Length: 180
Ligand code: SF4
Ligand code: SF4
Image (cartoon, rainbow, N blue to C red; front, side, top):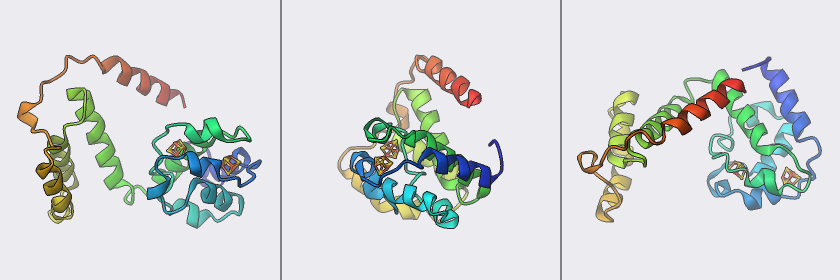
């Protein structure tokens, strides 16, 4: 991460300075329903220097970088980039608080890389093993049973391994991330 937390927040504030609070970003965001603050609210918090509220928010963690808000913002603000900066900042400031989402994200990507799609049972097994928290699987038991009943979970040994066709995409993303 480049600069102090205040530098990063100052940069993000400049990026959203021209926000007119129209709410188009919130209306366009496919993940807004699960966020504790809508994207519009988050930008308002940034502009009002509510640093603590911003950095403890789950909003930017749930951003999937789909770019809808960026494409539709009437002020042409670089919202997805601003979300990424906040995520990197919060991760650097609070690595323990981010462990769960980071482990899940990494295992998710590795599963896609291995199989060409996510293998749910393998993903969750590796996620639980890496988290080393015996209580954690219990929190997901209800959801797992629901998925099993609906035949939505594939078993690892039934999944054919892909020949690495995604490898080039992963390499390119890593190259681009190192340039940021
Ligand atoms: S769409 Fe743009 S101008 Fe409208 S609330 Fe979101 S950031 Fe602000
Ligand atoms: S880029 Fe992030 S905040 Fe913007 S619409 Fe997509 S998920 Fe929502």
